[in-house]
Length: 517
Image (cartoon, rainbow, N blue to C red; front, side, top):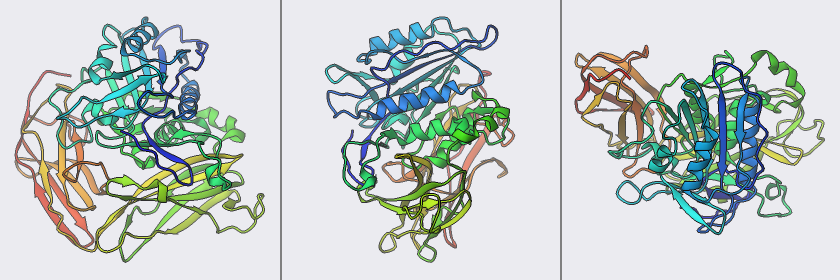
């Protein structure tokens, strides 16, 4: 479900990146032996039930194409259909044709994005729309899983859409009984939780103010995804700098840097390498690198006593920088009220006195943020953007937690009563809290010993869930990554508001022995 919102970027509420109507790409030369990679990039620009979002889809598909082509393991195929995909049957045909020769050791990538629709577990199934503006069909999780029937290999699904977390049953109060993509050969990354919208901007307006006249459109998630894997950005998702980005690393990078919605992943803590690159070759692209690297925020929590956040980053060349500040109210990011704050620390650079102009070097900045009125608490999004050659790029975004001075957290924990080891299932943990807070969440055994710490004083973030709360997922493994022994366990939660500390304990959870995954 989408509605248009207009502001300084002409932000629109929507749900995906796309690729309809783009020409097919020539095949890259594949390895003669070993793993073969193939990719199918699908997207939708035009709809029957929604307005067109062109050119955002086109830009996102090209961004994904560029990201994948930077892989040190060449792709045998990067396919973009020449015509819009308007039906589940046509998408199934494309999947079967593109990955027909896949072997058990091969890796198949499907990037698909469109408007996402979902009315909750008690209503219609989640779906992505396939359309050309005249014909339209709904792609369900069951149909997408079935489209891969008979295809060998590992399938990596990248879904950028509103409510896309519902495809894997994540970001919701209670999981549906039937889950898809749990057979062991799927790795799924989504742009948002089951109850969250995704966001994009485009160039629909041409106001005199430059903030309304950037020539490109893009989706926040897809841009964050492509930048996380881009050699021009130094492949920031590769935290241990070993030349390989695992699913776990990519998810962690997106959760940290993509603030407009909450990415979801299945499986949790998965070390499957989704992207490899030549670490030694990064220095060869210095001249074309991103102007901003190494962004870090010194704090992501605010209170009435301290309404400032700090951030640091490196500018590799003269560039213009601004900070986008967006408040959340009534479950929505209020982009139409967003404030664009240009960097004003440096007076003169290669850009003269243009707003936001900075010189190369390490930058340390402090931003003062307006707080919500009263003692309600809330969330603020801060995005660091660069403006270069008429193009805007979001380099990092953070969800800032605004803590009320004090409140009754009404902390509670809900989990299923059991988890079977080796069944490719994960334990969903719903933590109810009446207000934003910091959470520490641990798994303890029957003797009260901590076997796994899931978070430590981590700020909550909005998920659009009713009742209000946060959701974490445990894969039944201990802190060393080994399956815990069968037995009784509980989830122990502590919630923090300044010096206030509340606690909650789940009902007992039986971990049952199952087949080896």
